[in-house]
Every structure is written in C-alpha cells, then in structure tokens.
Picture 1 (cartoon, rainbow, N blue to C red):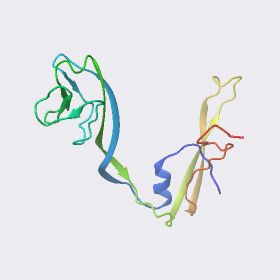
Picture 2: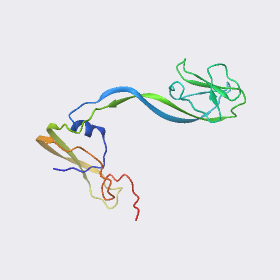
Picture 3: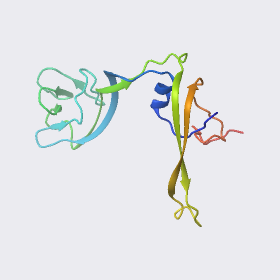
Picture 4: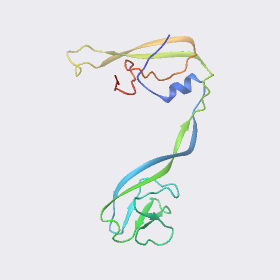
Length: 171
C-alpha cells in the first residue's frame, strides 16, 4: 500500500526507522527583536542570548561600562537585559542574537524498517453547498494487524501533489 499525505510530521521518520527521539540542548536558534528602550536606557530580551551573539547595527558589545556607540549585555538576572549609553537610542532598537533551545532529535540511517501494526485514520466530510457547510462528521479507521514499513517517507515536489512545496511553475 502507498500513502500520500500533505501533513508533515517528524514522527513519520522516527516510526519508519524504528528509533526514538532523544533530547539535545545544543541547538542555537536565531531571533530578531524590535524593542523600545525604557527610561533607564535598557531593553529586556525575550530569551537569554548565547555569549557574544548579540548584534545591533552600528554598535559594538562591551564588557566594561557603556560609552557612546557601545552596548552591554547583562545575563546575570532572571531576564537578560541590554544596556545602552544615554542618548544613543531614541526609542526603538533592532537586536539580533542566538539563544539555546532544547530540541528532540532522532538518528536516522534510512536502512531500518518498522514492523508491527498500523492504524490509518481518514476523515469523513459531511456534504454541503459550500465549504463552510462541509465539516468532518467522523473518521474511517483502517487497522492493519501485521505490516512492515519498508519505504521511507519523503517529499514529492511535483506541482500536482498534496504537499507542494512551491506553488509557482516556471514555463
């Protein structure tokens, strides 16, 4: 049997390789924030930045006290703060930085296969005159008691597939 779905989930890759997710806290995510400077010439960051990753156009980071053209990052408190020299920033400032996230990862070799049983769930839609009247009224469940998953999930980027990555066609 072959299944095509427009829904992408990492669980598909883990299941078909008979493996599990493991926690890994070494991923750095980029973020850019537009913040308003308060009355003390500082802003609060949404996340704790990776040391040395804070970037503000036209300014440099310093570890000493702030002077004109420099900023200081303080991560000692519960909320990370960026301190500016009085008068350097009028009101809004754009700050880019990296922060560490805890992510789940799976080591996949694309050689393993999963064995067991599978339950496939298909939605059943009610009939209606337009799309607002049509809704899911139930599900059809297909239970395969013994199966082996031998083909890995992948991407079909053809313009006719349900999960088209790019809706543009170049003629």
